[in-house]
Length: 245
Image 1 (cartoon, one colour):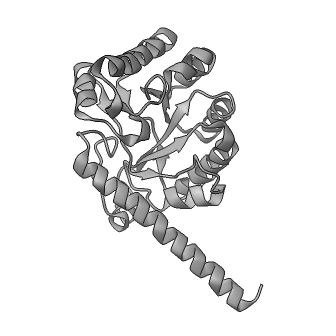
Image 2: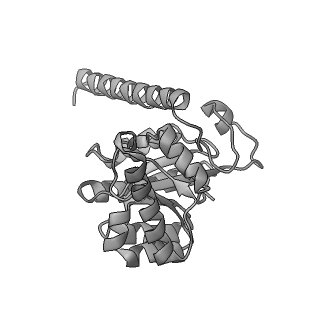
């Protein structure tokens, strides 16, 4: 590769990173302004500045939270659980009710391995278009499915597409549930490559950060590989991975 080609490749990479940053920061900033209250950082952390987070005292807490939406999925869940055991990692799984019905054994395994389990609705529907009755069915049916399998009533909720309206917010309050948003998302539902997934998430790693990944069959191998690399990369920065309580 010539020097000109190398410079062009580096320039293209920088531009792609800039677009990714603008997308993530723009959507996150807008969501924080418009969406009902919820959890943007876990474990009572409030560090917003990346440089400040990286320069924090060595003795300070450096927990971070990996979250996985859309499971349980036989193409991903068993391999994630095996990896987490090897790496001593705890994560949070936001599961879909109709997936739970198909794969109760996988959800039970998630619970037995000590990971947190949250509700991601029954059929991954866009909540603001639903009536109160249909919204209740989506959320409460999934709560019941999770409880039937694990014996534990879920207290965490992640809205499909990251959007929850006031109707849903009131229902979640009535159920004693917390809406969990994000501090970084990877777009790993697209085939963007493991390196891109890792780069997008690691750039936004801060103490208490909540990172979103997805258990989807078409991109499952990408997610598994990226999660392994991300975990090892952030461990080098003294992060520990915990489930959201």
